[in-house]
Image (cartoon, rainbow, N blue to C red; front, side, top):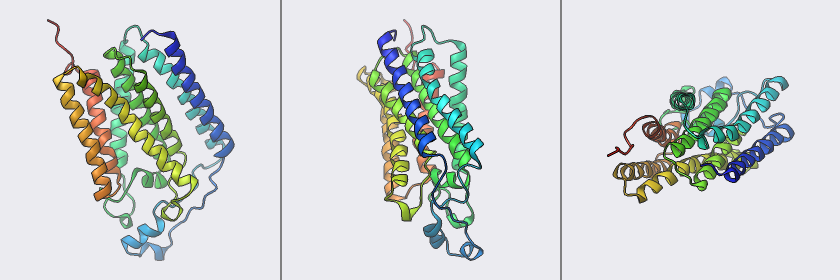
Length: 293
């Protein structure tokens, strides 16, 4: 890709995203105004199902400990979003992928995979039931708000940069994939700043925006990978055809599990683990590379 118009289009898109995010955080998210509940000793003795029904999604402490912490987070996260435009220029439009770029993408891919795995197996008190079926990433974020923010940042950064790396390594020039990946990886920044509000606050702007942006991240982040895989699928590349089928099957399996078993951090991580494995193999091994005659 060396089209300056396309480069400027993507840069402008990310500058708009970062500016809107910074204004939203500055003007509307200054302080968390929603109630948070601390369980009493009597609550701790409730049966598991009653405890979950009462406290699922309720905050235990304010989202930010003070204005200094809040503004440092606003400045830091907004700056990172502006850097996404820089990543597009340095990865997607690079004349040649440098060793530094390769190391950077590989390290944040490994860090992202390791952190979301560790984070997904954190647990609440016993009242929250089976960690594999009851505890979601968002619920963990209410107990561990900064871990949740790091989870979102690393997931977004690792998926975004490594999808760009995959496109550049294979000289794939599809604009749609870059756009949907960008929108998906930006959406998670809303998710981590607007935590779930509990079962009794489902039909509120807060909870709906949390769920909507989480789903946008999940589906558009996966879409960026699938668009590339389908491109290779059309070329009758057998390895990529198998990879496409497996990845799509995992996404379908996740949807089935969400409907039949329920939401949990473990189930939410399934497509992420497969995406990380696939991106690592494509980007940093020769398994999918075509052998030269």
